Image (tube, rainbow, N blue to C red; front, side, top):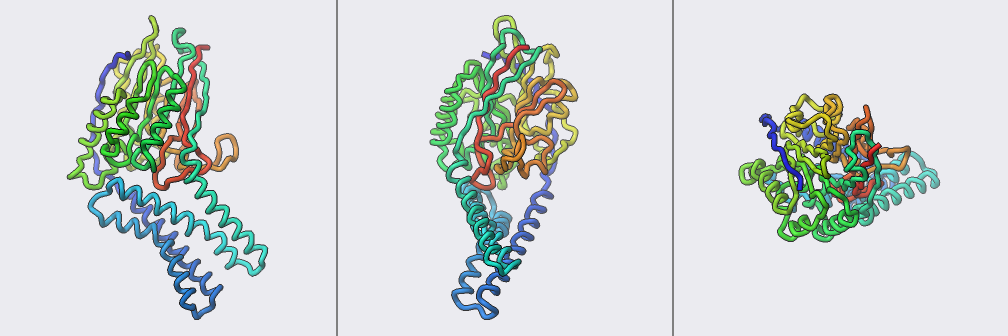
Length: 413
């Protein structure tokens, strides 16, 4: 079994920033206002100025779907806490909003722009396709677990580790699984079938709080198998930063309890620590960098503020091949700059659960926010792999980006 060298990082307290949430709320209100206007104009176009009772009922139904996001935002501001049931309900309301309000807008625009039947027919077809894509992303792609194979060769890899196999998983978000026991069991079975030497998890095991991991789910987490064990780090959702009622559910206690549950299941949490894996006379190091509370407002930023991540590497010999686990990929710039990791594994982005199959990496909204957002990157002879995750947040669907388990084989040059 690996021998662990513990080096805690200094903790710095910082008030949680809300600017990004406020901007998101204003953006939601703006989009809803635009859709309300489009629906009203379409109703006037189709039924005339004097709307019948049926037309008013139809318009009211459309307006109800347009107002779903701001209504949820308002309720979210008013309620004292955000339990898992509320988060799940929000996800499904978002889904209904996308299938109805968003999907019908191409048809609305076509109606308003042209009187030609062909143009309106095309608008209707686009709306139907959009709704179908959303439904397929929920019913099929959301649980269409896939395995990607990667082979990496390095001169720094010790001879005894030639052919070393790694299973990389990330972002389970157990609290947002529709059928947690069935879905998590399938992921465990797929990981175990790979017969890897080690399983490495890069954060966001839960959605809001550690109670999402029931005794039944603990048994499934305990069933993950790898020769050298399972190593994990804490993500932004894991440290309790998303808990609203922080008096009743103290985030620090939530994080400690989650770490304890993982340890009881045989998972070794590398909370800013380095562990060593031995093969004969050779060794490699696995370092874990946990998510810091003060980075919450920057979790979607392309560039990270200065953060002390080097303490996790304290005492690590430079000649050792190192694998670093870090939830957010933005830390890779600093890792490469200090030449600390040969291979960095990350998650967090999910490719924002939407991707068009265009080009080598695809096209995703994640490209706007992140410098590196999915798959394998190489710079200065070092690699970063961003796993697209297996769970969902915000909405229960994946479009063009299936839940992924990564199988990495290390080869010695």
